[in-house]
Length: 243
Image 1 (cartoon, rainbow, N blue to C red):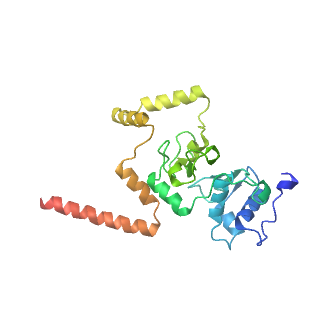
Image 2: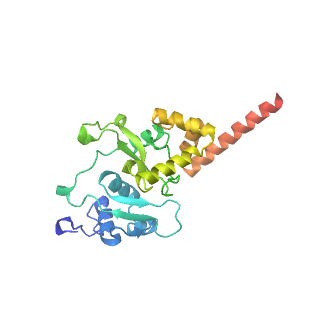
């Protein structure tokens, strides 16, 4: 890292939390190294939204931070690549206009909390790598190419589709693996897949959409929904018994 990109002291509370988080990652963690969410929170015990600052770095400034969801205690995150030097306004260029939390949630709900390209939902394992999927909100037409900043020009993509690269090896290996997997599907599932191919997108079933929406509720709200569903199932069963 050259002198012009040298970050400030991450412990300096006079600096914004986003810059402090970036400086901590760059100087304490280091590019290519692993760290844990526990270490992050221990470094910033007085910053309630420190996780949001990392999402800002990943989504708006090109910082490649990989998250291993469901990993055992210990290092569950990796600073793959340092992005824009947010501590140097003269050299920092936000990759896209900031999307509010409400707008991001609206887009995710509209897209059924699934990648609109491959259909995977957050936390599900990618077929190619086995890593859990992460969902991002991205512009369909980049702002730099004349795209609008509104939600109508935004779409949900997983980390793999967003990168545009599949870790399946060379083209021949990818073709062989995908072809074998597709041809081994039961006939009914092949028919559904063919319909998705024709439309160019996956159409989640109502129960899949309901499951995705349920998973994004807090534990307290999940409990309420479970009870409501249990009551509804019981009422339906009683009605069928009476008939």
